[in-house]
Length: 280
Image 1 (cartoon, rainbow, N blue to C red):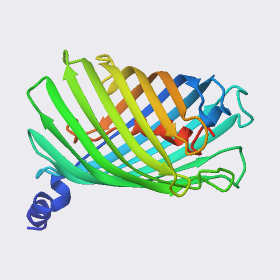
Image 2: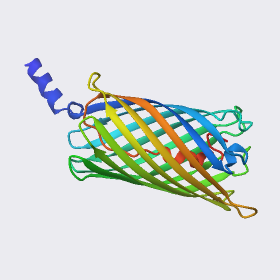
Image 3: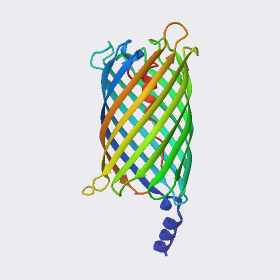
Image 4: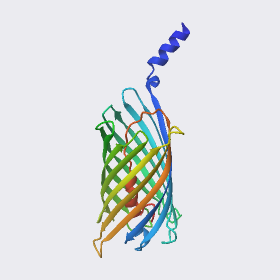
């Protein structure tokens, strides 16, 4: 009787219907700046960065999910500017529903960055938004989002307040069971200097992921991103910065194979770099 009661409790418990999943990613990249980026003191230059990301969540049989994304990045601008080492961290919480063909959800999070290796110009930004996806067929899928960003760039920066609207679209194609291709475009329109200066950011990214059959859950990826940041100055010439980034890395997926489709917010980093972010 005790065993029967225990079995019934386990099968009817909400936890029994949950599928836990997660992933860990390690990536390295190099960016080439051209133009007049605030982050590089008005000069062109090259930055290198390493990043680690940890994502985990729970997906119910009904399709409801909760997820947490943690990120940590370290950037070195090769002495192009006085601020040679910077780091940033992020935490994003997500909740939503993933059905067979479509998904929708909300996200809220915080991005913090430390510049100059001191405590006087740390930046904190809060973001929130909605996201959704649609699976066209077994090969093609779409993902989009709309969010709001707000925060402080730190006491050392002229740009003391930032806020803006961020949006993006991601198209994914499964060429084979192992090879996955994706392309995405992101746009952000934000204000600085409480709030006199407008900054627009356009980014375009192409990415390829390859699953390694010999090690289940392990995949390699490479990505190329191009972005243009247009900082519209009230006095003086506008700052227009072109950024080309090459990245490569490895991802390990663990837990349940099925997981919801969520948005990659990495395109926001060039904006942060030009408004007291991780590179300034």
